[in-house]
Amino acid sequence: MILINKRAENQDYQTILAIWEKSVIATHDFLTAEDRQFYKEQIPGFLDHVELLLWFSGEEVVGFSGTSERELDMLFIDPAFTGQGFGSKILAWLMEEKQINQVDVNEQNENAKRFYLKHGFVVASRSEVDGFGKAYPILHLKRAFEK
Image (cartoon, helix red, strand yellow):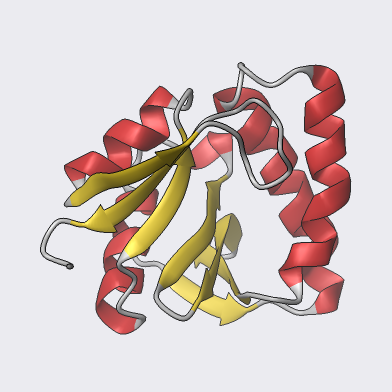
């Protein structure tokens, strides 16, 4: 499996939003439809504030990531490609090349929580609500060896 990335541009935002929505529908079953729509409307405002990469296997876009400094702000894989090791490969690259050492995850997203814990992250703290004040608890994860 060879993965390549390219920096996303404004013309890629529709592709990114489509992947985000498919992924969230598949993995965030705890969100109400209204909240999912709310977050979908918020996402474009964040895309310009992260280092945004599209990830490809051959010609197909498998997902995208967004980082700022050493934090992974977003990592979404198209559901058609989940369970094939792409997320692990992308995360490993980001940890190596971008020194990613922290990520926030919805506490109710069991698969994501398990994924990050498996890759050496530990729960550093917890917030009762998300960044918008909604009742979706957030786990703040750090790589186990980080202080």
